[in-house]
Length: 472
Image (cartoon, rainbow, N blue to C red):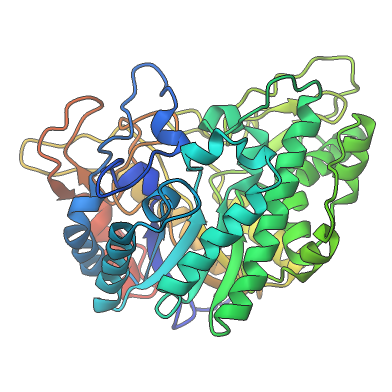
């Protein structure tokens, strides 16, 4: 659809950006914080560890002030489970409560709406040793953690996100360092989707608890959604795209919104004797978890073709790379899309298509919780970072949000990844996303001084004009 007149962004549109605790805070065992699974995992060779990151823990006042200078209306961040509950359960760490109280209050001082992610890849190591999400008790662990957060921060936090990219925890857990498989497991697919089931139940119970404890708050999921294209108009490829969309996207949103398993995914799991077992009360809990909005991360679309079950597909791909499942679909590189320096396809129009499809299926307000370009940024001798490639990427995606709004899709806000440079999930410090440059290398902490990139000034202008001025 080509619109003769574009609708404006809503006056209360939440312009901001995102981070996650384990990738930005540092201070990983400071002030009583316990280790998470991310702190103890072996990082990929040649990349930095998560000990210091961008040291946001000690620089948060400076960082929030820079976000305020950009004009942020919102800041999406996560709360480190082990900073609040060092062992995952049991005694609460007052220093952790104090830090997040200070962070939230600092945001509110500048009229920045805190958007809190409850879980972002950092299961407490103590709970990881007890089986992580494979242990059915993980449902209660998570709900207890949610209760502690609601009690301590619910008077000031209006927007909550449950589990960041649960679909990626399920599909590419080994890549992001989150998958724990119990010893002696004989059906890994069943085990993974049993863990996924526990997360789905935990999420639903946390959403219900939020509505009970904080009737004025809003809560939603935060999956990574990439609309899947068929590689051709062959009917077989269309069926493959439906399969991949179900496995990658709709399973998670069908469950969050409707409380039911997607039929295509359930049929596939049945074929592999991998359907999850329901515990007592699970079905009711899933039906009672009603999101107020859908948060979602978008980086690109995916493309796939038919796979007849005769080829062993390579399922070992990262979050945004074409992958496959034998007998379901086979990844296909889209020849019409350029790629980033790190090999991820770039598809702004696919952003609009993804928004349209989600809104058509679920009719809930949508909040962009991640979108951005990872690149090799360079700090010049005079303290500048020229990143026109990031400006161009963001401009094209913001244009598509406005087109989606003109399509009558309800959009709450845009919080791209990331507010400041941080440690990328599996590519270290060299893959930078932020509007703010942090002076450190992979293994040399240097000064940790903050520098405004060109995109900082550009995004400031975008926010000030409420998305009207996207020029250089």
